[in-house]
Picture (cartoon, rainbow, N blue to C red):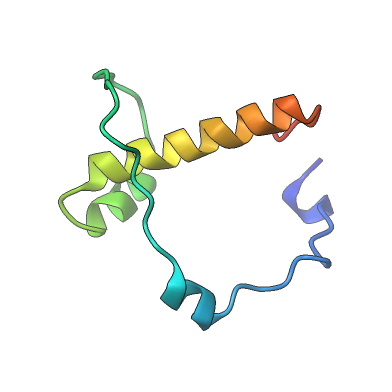
Length: 80
């Protein structure tokens, strides 16, 4: 299934008010590991443009993604 084939008509658009109330969620101080991964330059540049905590933001994004995958697996869904 491609992105174009996904029906998103029942998902309301996010408003400016939503983003004004949004809060950055960073994981609590968990044990971390250092890894080297390949990431496209455009994505890396975007994270780096957000400030000096780019690595923490990337780690948080990966953690949120992993949690979503775990929750989907528990519910018997596949999000990949």
